[in-house]
Amino acid sequence: MRTRERIKRFIEESFVVHDGTPLGDDDSLMSSGRIDSTGVLELISFLEDAFGLELSEDDLMPENLDSVSRLTFLVERHQTRGEVRLQEAS
Image (cartoon, rainbow, N blue to C red; front, side, top):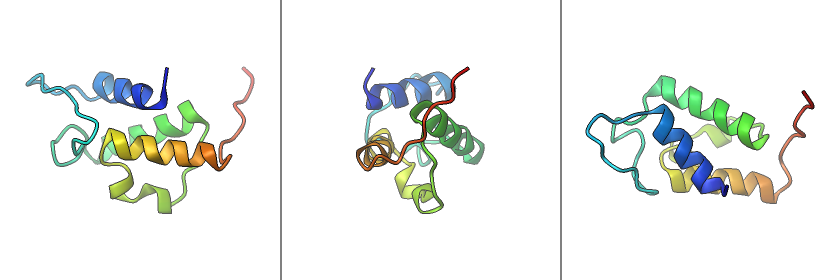
């Protein structure tokens, strides 16, 4: 599954909107009320675990976390630079 789809699926499954509004890739997650401050923490944890990232304070700017498109760019930027940690064997 591609990065964009993994992120979108996590958001749609974890942060249910009761009016059934579909999530667009460029929709603001915070302005729409889909994700609140606690949800942002869950989202960061998901990104770090699912993609093996170690996000810095600079990465955690609201503009980087506010849409599926921006989240995808953030993850792919880290992957392109080789800034991912190795997954620990279970």
